[in-house]
Each structure stands twice: as structure tokens, then as C-alpha cells.
Image (cartoon, rainbow, N blue to C red; front, side):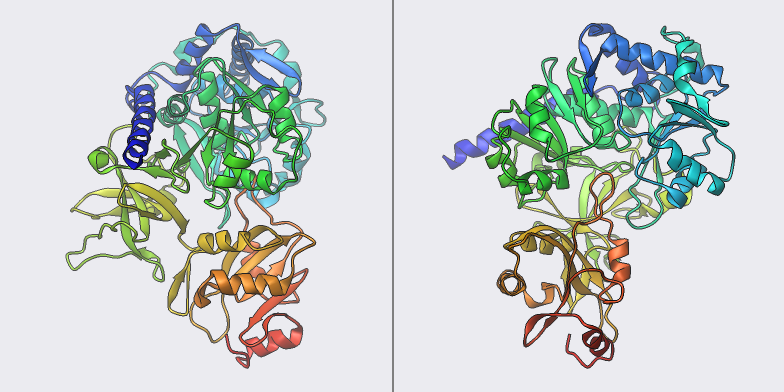
Length: 595
């Protein structure tokens, strides 16, 4: 039975890999074939089929293309030329994908701005992309107006909706624009290595950075998922992730639209309406970010959750503790977990469904993949180098940094950020031989003897306490299983007079949560050095639009009761978790309490 199961897994892996490689074959940086050409081919093949459904309205492939063509002609009429940038600052809506698809037809770059931003972070993104025009709607226009004084250069604002003042009415302008494809001469001599999009990092550790998405990179995303998901023209993909992010805006769209399928797009994710909408729209797939799945399993039972037609859920960041709950409770036949970063050159797929793994590189294929895990000094936050000056590859079970060799082909190329200095910081040189160059993912991983990769933590999130490395990710998984705990964020905080950083956990809990029961769970499940020294209770944990936890503010608050709103506890060596009062805080600061 074990041999049969192993062979079955190997067959699933090979099939998934072959499907993916077949779809990305022929993609090359010097090719004149652009992402808009891939999409145009899909339109020509499935012109009358439904493409996108949004809030009760469905457009066919042909109608989607006509909308995109209008945006292309609008930009030409507004004087936007090849290589210039238009900023797109809107929530998910029917026109979103059509905007950048249309602009790519005339060689214009679209900067996909996170619609959750405002103020200085928004202005920062608009400034660095150097756009001269910004597209907004009724929801984002007031936010843009508030950030306007912080801009370094004037931007013409185009509103999909009612305009006032010096705003332009884009809806009205589009009515006079042709629905026919623009002349290809506008992108003559362009190559796939040219920039198609700017997609911004989440900014969880500072200001967002603009990752340069070339046409070839967009093709790898879209074609890759068209193959890896095994989607076909009968599939309907439910997308509740933001379109400004690669997972929802490229991977999910590619899976559907390059296979003749359709996308059911939502303005935003709602755990309360998720299954009802999936059932009503007869969706067969959905795309996820890990925390989205946690929200689903934490939600009360839904009468629709057992009536769906979902055959595949695909995405990244699915935590090992949530994985079996998601699959068993909702009876999802297959989960496709993948690993990748917007700017990086490392891609991994878990084709055979090994729970907890983010991907696999079997021994017999290692030479065909550009990915390795190297030994890493967590405290110094840099790779460990041997006496000869080269890095040391980590063995099975060893935790290290995942890196990707930078090469000249499409899959191993590193396009980096708009900021060249930021790009250079992500490159390691002389890793295994003189002159080689590798992209540093910033992610700690480990592998096993079968070649499966397991995510451990982000570098910087893992901290050192009591002479031991503590993974925030692994601690969070253990704490999530405690009675009454709904959501967890773990991070390290500095304590006066102590080396390293002490563990602190922010929890969202239900009415049944009890601090003493929690303390017993912590003592039972975690070694002393990994047990959170501080715990704070919150009504919710702030996240980015892609559900990444915002830890900067939590770290800044520390364990100061004057800054922390809500219950705050300290783990006393004798009494367990006790409330942090000003007196307790002062004793810790003075070193009068053992930590």
C-alpha cells in the first residue's frame, strides 16, 4: 500500500509539472510576443464565452476585449506614450483587468496601486512610479485627493464616475473611444523583457517597493497557472483577492482566461457570503491567501458550505494547522499550494498535495530547478559562509534561507524593483562559485529527504531568545490550537537588560478563552524559550489587503500598558500569566522581575 501511494503521488507530481512546463514552453525575454498577445489569442478563440462576472454583470471575452481597446485608445488620446506609466488606484471592479490589458496593447505600463493605502504610503507609490495620470473611482477619489499635497509632480485624475473640479470624467471619455484593437505599431519592436506592470510589495516592514513585472513575467504567472491548475473552459474561478496583487490579478486570471474559463470577481472577501456566492455562481475553483482559509474555518457553519462544486483550491500561505480543516470540513478534493514572490525568481508547486509543503524538487530533477536552501545565521541575519568563502547548502531538516539562481532564461531571470539599490540588496554573489548570482528570498525554509519544501518564517520574524532561534510562524501554529483562540500574530520585542528579543503574541479570542487554560496549553505545547513572555488581546488583527499581518505597530507598542489597548499579560515564572499594570511594567523595565 505504501508503494502504491508513493507511486500515485509521483504520478500526480509529474502530471502537474508537465502541464505547467508545457504552458510556459517558448516564453523568452527576447520574444516579440507580449502578454496582450496571449490574451488576444484567448479572445479570438473564445469570443462569445463568458469571461468575467462582477456584481450581477457578465461580459464575454469579446466584450472584455472591447472595453480594453477603449482604454488603449483613451490613453493614446490623452497623450500617453509607450513606456510611460498610468497609475490604477481602484478596488476590484469589472473594468480593473481591462485597464491594464488595454494599456499593454500600446506599450503603456500600469502601476497597480494598493487601494487600501492612503496618505504618505499612497503618495510614495505614486511618486516612485512616475505616473502622469491616475485612474480612480468614487471610492478612491477622495483618498487620492487627501494625498495630493504630498505628491512630487502633478497627476491628472480620471474618475470612473462623476467628476468635479479639475478631475476628468473617464466614463464619458471612453464612450467616444473605439472598441477596435489599436494598431500594433504602437508596440512595434517591443520585447517580452519590457515592463508591463508595477506591482507593489505589501509594505509590512516599511514603505512599499515597486516590483517590475515584465511581459515575460506576467506570462509566466498567467500561463503557469493555466497549466498547473489543470483548468478548462468549463471552470469558473472565484476571485475575492485584490486585483492589485499577483495571486488574484495574474495567477487566478490566467488560470481562467487562458483556458476559456470564466472569473467570478468579488469586490472584497467576505467569510459570511463566501460559500453562498460560490454555490450561486457554480464556481469550480477558488484562489486563496492562507489567512483567507483561516477565516473560513473559524467561521460558524454555513448551510451552503456542503453544496458547492469546488474541485480545486489554489494559492499560497496555507498554514499546516488549517490545511486538514479546510480540506475535510469543506470536502475540497484537491489543494494546490504554491510558493513565489512578486519580484523573485523562485517558484515551487505542491502538485501532489503533501499537507504543509509549499512545493517539491525531487532529487532526480534538482539540476532543472534554480532553487536551493543555504545555511543561515538568524541572529546576524546573513548566510553562513565556510572557510573558502562560499555558502553552505542546508541538508534535510536544516533551516536555512531559500535562494534562486539568477540566469538568462525566463524562469530564472530577476527583474527586481524599480529602485535599483533595493534590487541589489536582494542579490547574493559568490554563493557556490566565483561570480554566481542568487536571489535571496528572505524566507527561511527546510526540506526533507523526499525533496519537499516547508516554509518556516520570514527572516526578521524569526528571533533569538535564551540562546535559541524562535520561529514566529511555528509558535503561531501551536497557539492557534489553544481553546478559544481565533487568530494569532507572534513577534519579538526588546526587553531592557535582556539579550535577544522576547516572544509576544497578539490574540483574537472568543468568549470561552481563559488565560489560565491558555497558559497550560503554552506550557504543554512549547519549549520554555519559545513560550510568549507577553500576550495582548485584540478585537482584530490588522492586515494588509492580501491578509499579511501588520506587525510594525505591534512591535512599536511593545508591552507598555500605556500604549497597548485591551488586556495585556506577562508570563511570571511562578504565577503564570498575570495582567501587566504600570507597576509590573516598571519592575520589568528595572530588571526586578526575572524574564
